[in-house]
Image 1 (cartoon, one colour):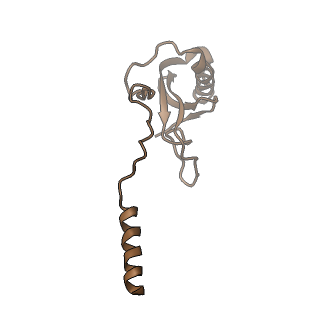
Image 2 (cartoon, helix red, strand yellow):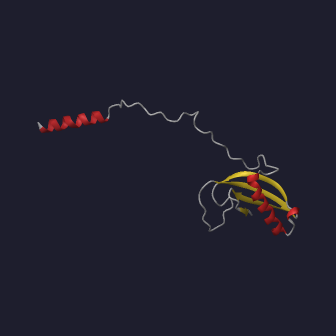
Image 3 (cartoon, one colour):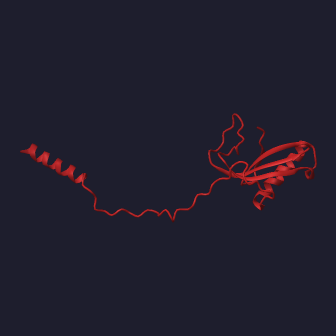
Length: 135
């Protein structure tokens, strides 16, 4: 008799656990309310002839560094291209062997300058850090 009672209780428990729920589903965010994703600029697409104010500090640092490296005056450096970028990590797309970088998408700029017959590529982040990216 005990075995039948135990079997009955197990069957009741299993059937109630597998029964459909009468609780209505909670509404989630509607697709119309979700923010639109912004596509990252692709390399070589729509370079900016005149950088915006947020990029100007990085451009100034890049031109000054290029002038020193190429032994010319700052006025002899021309800005060829400035493009907003989303770098894949804190290396700004120019990792150095043996260094460790934060693995976070880092917004910044690709800055290409030329002077003294040479062209230099700089990468920056949104905080104003600018590095020469020699590939």
